[in-house]
Length: 297
Length: 276
Image (cartoon, rainbow over all chains, first blue to last red; front, side, top):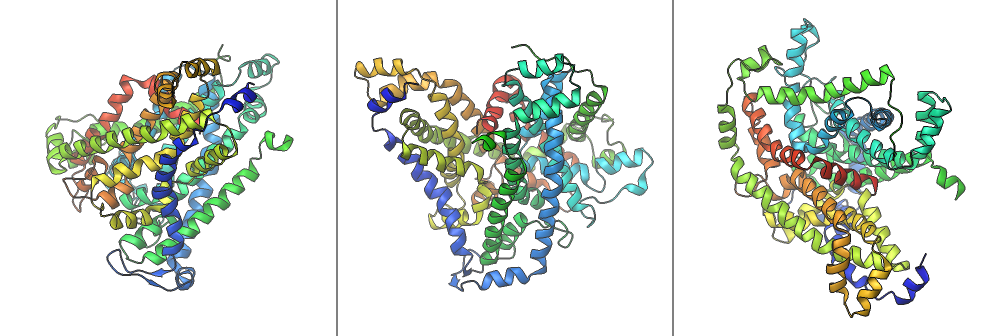
């Protein structure tokens, strides 16, 4: 390393980071901090004057059955989506990495939901899931009319349908990322294991998995955060949190309270809860997937 | 680098193609629905259209005013990407050249920012837009989107700029090159793959952005983006064929770009998550 000579000659250049830091502070850090302030206000919609009421909103939120439903739905959503998505994506990613026949076609297909925006995904599934849409049409072609339902308007299927869409877009995309990561590593170790006659499953889980465990953890955290935070958009497009509160998640509650029910204080208390849940979940994932590096550190 | 042995596990093969089929089915359904009437969509969901109803595309285009929405999307995305690069490239240059405690704090700030989804602060951002008088304008999105893109862009570009050979920098400095000369004639050319990756990755993110566009830029026909315009086709009596046709039109630009440079794009998008 030439770090000593670099350091001696290193010119003062960090001022060049100032514009980007200012930008980041104004548009990202500022709004994030403002959440905590808005959470203490009584504020009936954006056009009204807010008044300070301290922690009153917190009591209101925690006593509200809608909030309880949202907590439950968010827990169900991430507790199903992430443990299903990450192992399946890892296995598919490993499969892609071994370059099976037709892997180019597979990787293009797996990749493609990553190109489609959430709004377009919503519109595609609006058609697929509507009472006279693709899924019901398919069921009736198969003679299974009795299984047909209004998937997004039935309290027992609305949330599962949304979770299924999360998995539809998430698994393949994550698999492509795992495959890219695996092929960026030296191939000798895995080849050697295969030469030694290690079985497929053993090579995959006992050789390849530990090699990218840190990365699996990173993607698990990212997918967790995306699922937890950004479910609002898809719910807004497809179910509006309903029927009743059957598909209201914390993320959607933040949106709905601010824009349709005009209670910004409430909305931002939920926003803070969401932020804390995000941090707690990240710490949990980190503990569960403790990397090999950390042990030796 | 040799690839590992070809895989022969039949179960993995079957499952991987089954999932591929699950991915392809809604996309196929979308495309064939775009050419059908509501009735045919339901009675023959996965069959090819009996009569190819090209009118759906014209109806979708006119009803959602997609032409204007496309112009708005392009305008916002292009201005935002230029601004992102103007902010991120100098910052990455500085972080690549200096490695002290302050530089590490700045890098740490951006790393933390990368983890927090922008959605977390949606409502305060709307308040900011109102306070700054830019609510309901495209300009706010042009200013805001770069901020959400900065953490990843700076981190990625810094990694690429760290690969610039020290000897090259020293000889250029001996010739009296200042920061801007160094940046433009040494660092940017060498980090070009990184700049390309960041550009592709963030252009796609900007193009696809939905909730902030919906709540801040809004649904007025003269400012709304494609992502906001298209869901306007949903109503109590949605014409599914027209909706599907509109969706095809709105997704098409991304797929055309992907087919023209799929290797590059796949590299860019995986780099975003692999290195982040």
